[in-house]
Length: 115
Image 1: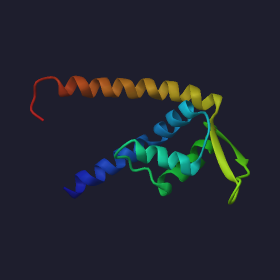
Image 2: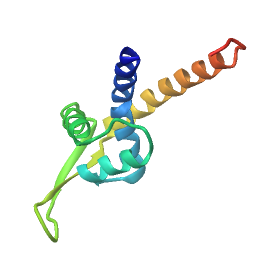
Image 3: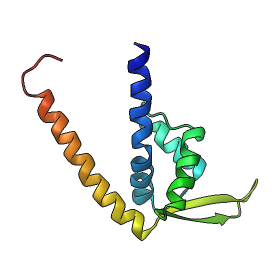
């Protein structure tokens, strides 16, 4: 049971980058904590701050996101993220791969074998 739990955690972590890109593409621009909250609202994702902030730094370093600092009315400035042109192109390509993976899984689940 422990091995399957570890596997599920890794699976969820593996898709967080694509989820962050998709969320930002739809939202336009969000700050880091809003991204964490949005992902948590969407279900059983492992997407806490300790997961999302390193992903945001990695996506920005890879040129898939851009960011800007915005002064807050209360508290410190917030860093807002947006999908770059390169990020949008990557998201389209990765999204197509994801769709193909989901379709393959759907077909395998529906082939009549017991699960």
